[in-house]
Amino acid sequence: MLLSLQNISLKSYAKNMETKLLDSINLDIDSGESVGLIGKTGSGKTMLAWTILDQLPMSDYIISGKIFYKSKNITDTRSNIKGRKVSMIFQNPTLSLNPIQTIGKQFSMILIKRFNKPKESTRKIVREWLRRVHLDNVSDIINRYPHELSGGQIQRVMIAIAVSVKPRLLIADEATTALDASLRKEILDLINKLRIEENISTLLISHDLLSIKQYCDKTAVMKLGRIIEFSQTDTLFKRPKEDYTKSLIRSLKPVKANISSKTKEKQIVCSIKNLHKSYIAKGSQNRALKNINLDIYKNETIGIVGESGSGKSTLAKTLLQIIHQDEGRITLHGDDGTIMDHHKPNIALSAVFQDSLGSLNPRMKTIQSLMEPLQVNGYRDSHDISNKLNDCVEKVGLDKKLLDRYPHMLSGGQRQQVSIARAIMQDPRLLILDEPTSALDIQSQEIILNLLKSLINDKKLTILLISHDLRIVMETVDRLAVLYQGEIIEEDEPYAIINKPKRAYTKNLINKDYNIL
Image (cartoon, rainbow, N blue to C red; front, side, top):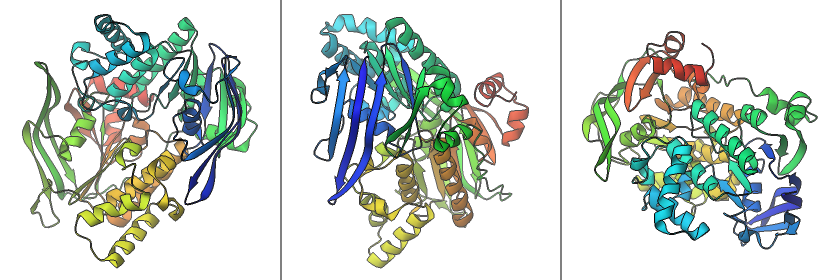
């Protein structure tokens, strides 16, 4: 037995109120074994991983029970194995990287600390592992900073770092969330190959039940902080015992929220003309966006798809002016056709990002995060603020009991509800959604997407939806644009593209992700 959890319970305290997050968890992982962990958002999966790795501040949490590593009780000495014998790939990779250090420097420093090797010998190891996770142009990647990489590229860097230290147990918490279908398979194939070759055990935490079914020997099901079912994966998927497990398996059908407004209105909200953006690192230029031309119309939902690194997130950040374009123009139009100043915060543009935890201030309670955009933009009347707050909280279906909690005390789905409520506070002209459902289980995806449907109808929102998941996009957008190497290569109604793609790249993308051709 490599790792054994015996009667693990976890409690948190907020405002002198006790909340049980984990309840009597018992779980064994053998050497070389792959175990899957599934359950709805908020079931306790990530909390369990953090408990194993001693990642939680004990001032806020109380743990009971015992953790054994190779039959040795490590309950009080988990830090001795953290990052050495047990390594983890987090679902929010941007929080694991230093924003002011290059990828190569950070990777090398980790290897130096773990293996006490000279800096010169680590360079070769860094390059080798970045290639093994299928990152192109390694010489360019090692000289970039985290913000210059796409979400998928950052995730692959973190996978390379986690596996390079040769752990005995690798915990992957939604490790492929930010990746497109082809890269998901490549990364999971790589992790599985390393597991077999190096006799590494893996704990795969995922909402992607198909991946769990394919890559895991055993699967545990979590509900409300408890493991309610644990068996061989084939047995669990063929003959689930619990109704909860049965409902998860039934949810394998594609999401069909159909949030699109199907508008025929042609009033331009945002116009993008000849947009270019490049990143330069040590003399090497990478073209992230190339000649982007796109008009976004009032009350429509437009989708942007493409593989990891195609420029989707860069486009979103450029629209929001988080980064600035090298060439081109972005124009926002008011209802009267006048041009609006999109450089002013929270005036016309708002966004919901895939990293809901990183998007919220960890030192602010939920209610403070929601009130902040109102206060920044001149709301002073407490009655107006209260009414606006209550209206948005009600519209997103957020439990008011959560308003006093900090971001880390919320589930992924709850944080995304908060992010959406915060984004709509100022009634934006254009709402940008960058992978808003990527870290959520299928039921939570449906909740979020149906929430957006109601918001579209109630608030007449215009939405730019960026996603790796073509199945979701197909059921949510009026219009679809395909991004390849920073360039829009196709743009049409979604089913026109699906049924008759004009480019080989688009056809390949559909075959891998949507699987209908």
